[in-house]
Length: 266
Image 1 (tube, helix red, strand yellow):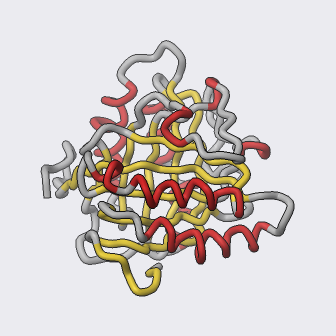
Image 2: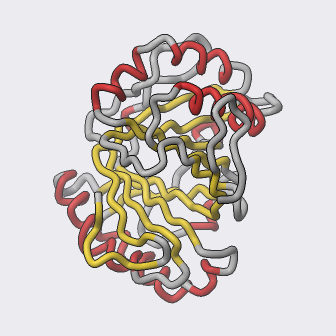
């Protein structure tokens, strides 16, 4: 463990080098066909990449209009044409790991066309991904993910998330998992795969994500309808112009602690 969050409730924090690839499956076949291919053949290509600390697939629920309640001045409804199907969460062992895995990554590039129509990679600097050990030894039964867009001209976005939002989430006492990433400016060249769209207008860029784990779906639902969400909105309103909250239908782990698992684990 590498530190602790600034919160009334101290928790251990791990710092990692993580990339998140937002994925949209092809629409010329059923969504389930695409999700199954990603879970099966495509996962084997990614799992075999040298230098991975962890590889997870986050399968987002098909019906995801936006979990975050309506908030003045913040976009909380997810546009139907930009609704994400899944997220590949790839954590590296070191800053040099992406170079060690270049050959395998080229195979992933070529395979994307078999399943995806659009892919967008977001990443932060090494050790900027934070995993907060909010419930040691406990496993979430339900998850959600927030994608945040910085308000144009606003300052203090990073500090607001790390020093205000994260401590407040920790103090809620309801979470079984908490991970946060703050992204570098998006650059298509970081993941410019062939024959797959990478359209990402500037006003649609995201600048951070937060993964929330709960004991079950009921607790997750209560989280988004409870009074604390209004407090979180007040914290974020000065710096965030959009909060897109997705239900995660499944979180499948293929590589853990640098070891490829014989079968994915939920």
